[in-house]
Image (cartoon, rainbow, N blue to C red; front, side):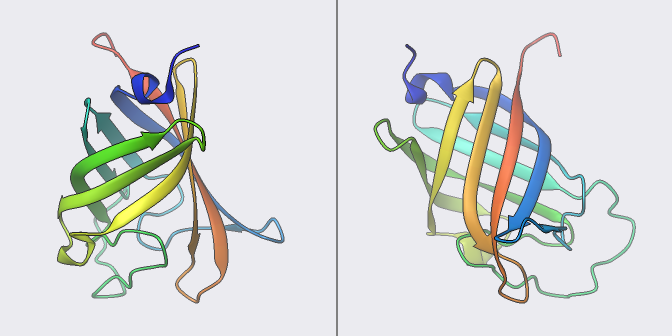
Length: 149
């Protein structure tokens, strides 16, 4: 069985992102929209992440994105950051330490995410909140990118 720390190394393309509250209601992130695009890159100790709203032609209605609990803040439909990471194999968690970001509010933050890899699929889950403070569970599903795709 491959260790999680080995399995996540590579480039991952976001397939889907879903935010669900305790009642099963799906919430749409007002900053990244219903179907954002994104990419995660993991080296042996460093990572980078980028997420973008598909249609950025309209300016955001909120000038400064409020930072939700346990989540990074983006700007104008774009969120990008990088840093170092570690994996807890027993807990199935990924801990990221943000060294650089499009939003200064993210720098220095540490986030812990539940992660699992099945074949060429990476699932990243976290507990966060909507803008009004409603607790949600976010599930980001990625597929491994190869040189051919």
